[in-house]
Image 1 (cartoon, rainbow, N blue to C red):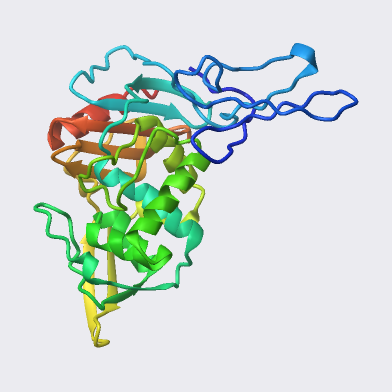
Image 2 (image 1 turned 120 degrees about the vertical axis):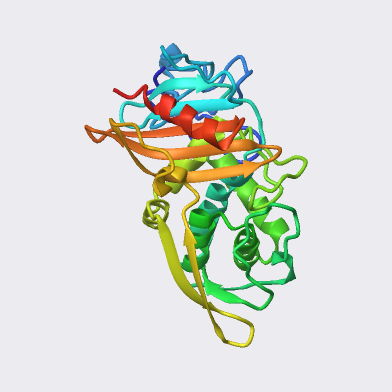
Length: 328
């Protein structure tokens, strides 16, 4: 399924608007058009129009579109909550299952956290941990920062994306916006601007919380935007990261973290015809096992693959390998 070949411009609020320019003596006329899956007229259905000399610019000029399930021969992801495979070069949706269903995203949330931080912060910006980094949820991934600890945004983003540290996500949110609540508001407004209108954030780390959800397609839109940043591309390709930050008294604290991606750890083998560049993992009891990847085929074509709500870590990587096997 191919994306459209023109561009629709996003507007604020819960809908996105499309502008139609009409060649008349009265100038231009605007037509509002909802970007919603179930709308009778939306950028999902609209490809082009020439009625009355109108020219419409659909939203997905440079994006893949998935408004229904797309199957692939030999791929059985029946145990997966949602999945997708997008060809970024040819703008094709090669596989899609429940891509517009709202599910818990776990730490895939942190891609949006990183995107907002990169847009509104600077790499050398100094962050200071508050009492809110002391997360007590059982099983939460933590790097162990304490109130008063300091590190740069660059350091924090590396720890966030490589190690998926939930405490550092809070540190980033408060450092960028002053509070988690303000940062989350920014996450939601930025998502709307990207056309990711079927998601809602209540925290910056993806820990289970009522009202916190995303769709696989929204994740694709957000990931696609994050890939425009060199720092993000650099970080997601790293197997490990070592750094030194300071505590509240100025004493140095050394930290080394390993990437949570099991392909990078060598636990699971990459498909022979695909090179996995990087991505993001996510796991909670509510979200199941999740993985989003940027990969390249042997001819250099880039792909984004997403699996959400798988039943186990082993099944997640088996299913992702099968999904990437679609690539020829």
